[in-house]
Length: 476
Image (cartoon, rainbow, N blue to C red; front, top):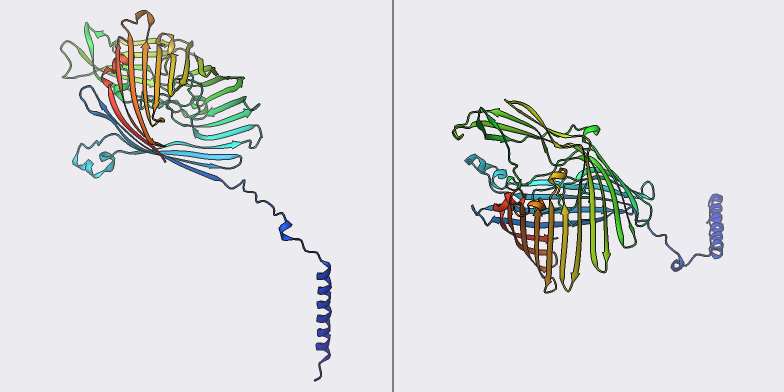
């Protein structure tokens, strides 16, 4: 058989190429796969997700007439945190079933909000950047809570966040607010923190039965005393602007040997309303007692500016914890109350321009399953001006039993408005509590409040608020 020249040429080229490949394979040295080091994958950009939740129940009942339930709450608190190598984002939601049915009409039975009231609260939502863009500086942006001071729940200048006084005896609770916070680290222990809160947020108040109602001297007209027919208490929030609403602050914090130190400054506003305007108007009220003049009273609450300078220390000496705080509250101008009535206008200085002081100190010690703590506080969060400052002594004793499955706690507080008139003006509260934790994260708590007082003490007006309570908390 005869082949065409082109076919013979192709076969020749193929033969030559195969021969060259065999020669190249003989010369090439291939590495051992066992000896090859594979490059590690950079997973620093992959976030680490953490989820958490807490289920809680809180039911309270008065031990004094009218012997009714006063508090009914069921909560689910959800927490989520996403972490990178140099950043994290976190947030928490609180789904609350709070209160009692408020049905007053058959039409209300069509709405679950009347039958079983509930609400959804955003407690926090923020981002932290660690060393970005500058290595020694951390940046935090969003809704969050910052704690200033060292006291156990009761502090003198922890005023960045407004207080959450919905449960007035659950001391130390605050509301989260939007802020920008910069933290510059000078060393592993010392840092300088600056913060900016753009929008003002007032405190949350407790139920009316927990609010001290001040005596009102309404005066008289033509020899007849004025009788309060209706009281309204509107508030006036500051304008939503940088000049009126924003607050600024800074603190430096660190340690010298066994002592932790802190110095802080804050320029902000009162979180509780101050009654700066009172209007008294005549009215008609058939329920008014004879020989009285019924009036409607409007008390306007505002939130004046203030400066706060605070300092604190904390140390552990011979296994005994010791801490203390002092704070100066500086009013840039007189806080004046204007009272308007048919008799004319009267202005009174409630709190003069200048400074007043609050301070506190405490010690604690633990031994053989016992824990004891004693704190002294001069000036609570609701007190303003030197004349209003009261003194409070708080003692707590706790004992764990059966490997802390059972905990017994007894706390007590003594209020002294004025040592010179202690016999006539005093307040006292006793808080016994029993906690049963059969498994880790599940707590059943039984406790109560017993309040007594006399004169112008804050506790004196709350003697009928004695309660017992049942709480259940589950950490998921």
